[in-house]
Structures are given as C-alpha cells and as structure tokens.
Image 1 (cartoon, rainbow, N blue to C red):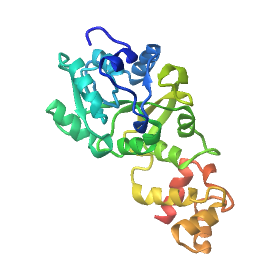
Image 2 (cartoon, rainbow, N blue to C red):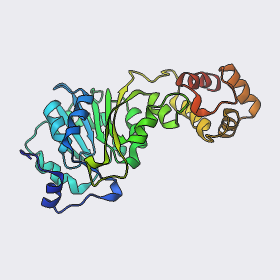
Image 3 (cartoon, one colour):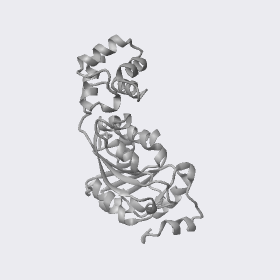
Image 4 (cartoon, helix red, strand yellow):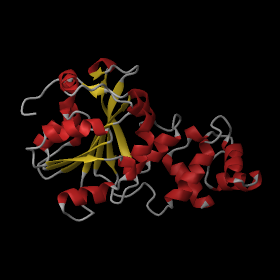
Length: 281
C-alpha cells in the first residue's frame, strides 16, 4: 500500500464485498480522515488502538502520526489485505480478533512488549450495532484509554452528549467515565456502501477517575438501570419496581437525596444520580 488505493479498487483486487452481517460501511471520503486524526491529537509518543481498520485507509494515516498502532479486525477476509498492505510498516501491528473478547491494555502491552499500564488512545469506526458494548468495554478497561475517538451514528452521538432533561442510560454510562463532544458530522454519502443514516465523529476525553470515584460501578448502574427501566414512569415507581424495594423506602431515599419522587430518570443530572446512589448503596 505504498500508494493508497480506493476502497472499491481494493475490493475488486481481492474479490471481496462488504459484509452486511458485520455492519461494514467503509469511509471513502478522505477529507474526514484529518478530522478524526486531529481529534485524537496524536504525536510520535502515542500508542493507538484502532478498532475495525477495514481496508486500512485510516490505519495508514494513524501510522504516519503515532508512534505505534495496533489495529484489531474481526473480519478474517480483511486480515490478508491489511497484513499484506502494512508488511513493511514496523509501527503497525494487525491483530485478528473481537475487541469485546480482548483486554485492550494487555493487548497493547503484548504488541509493544511493554507493561500492561501503557498509556494509549483509541480510534474506531464502529459498526452501529456494537457501539454501546464496545464503548462500555473500553471505558471499563483498566487502565482506560486517555482519549477515544469513534465514528458512530449521528443520533447516538447526540444521545451520548445530551444534557439533563434528555439523558439516557447510554449518556449516563459514558459521562460517568468521560467528557463527550461531537467533532463533526459525516454524511451517509461519505461511506461505501452508503448507510441509511448520517454519522458523527465523537470524542471522549476519559476522566482520570470516574465521576464518582468511590462508587461501586455495579451498584451505581444497577440503580441507574432501574430508574430508566420504565422510562415514562416517575422515579418512585420505576425505582421501586426495578430495585424490588417498597415505595416508602424509595420515597424516603429520593427525598433525602433532594429529588422530587415525581421526576423521571432522563431529567436527573450525574450529580443527582450520585446523591441517590449515596443513599441507596
């Protein structure tokens, strides 16, 4: 790959087609590559974990900017393309695997022959259907990435960046670990094959420690899930049903936390979820 080839050309050369079952949509408008790389703020000192390199279009640019790139690809058909294309690039390692079954720090340490606490950043073009589990997997890693830059469905990016009043369990889950922001919108026409919806580049600046560092994440999110379990119901009812506690106990907890029992889950801020956790933990 000394000279970049178009996505369509590579498909023809290797007699391949995008695999719909893996949600494959390949970025073909290179003008967005700089947006992604700029958002990651890479230097030669950085180690990058790329998830879903596809045909290596973004991988090449990452390799030019970062000191080390470890690219994890699930589709075995593309591994040959990637390993052939980057055979002469000493700072790019191609790994065949499912990121959800791999431990990011351990994977990078093995590739770098370094400690498992090596600092790293993540760049990914995620299939829409695995956005939530992959983000959760990355944010819960020990240690987590310093920064995560991902291409996601535009609607999902907006949900993740939402403010109290329009929060979702996804937004709370991400904002517990990171500060999200939308870098840019990416129209459907920038991909091959063309998806039905537009995308966005999302940047997550991972917090040095979770928003509530003393909280047990398992218990915290059990409370949050209970609150969102019946989204249209008032917190008094949804928490009572979700946690299996009587309404009098939930009412007392909400009032102690300074939260009106008639409110709904999407209106609570992170601080209010923390106050409720402190009472119910």
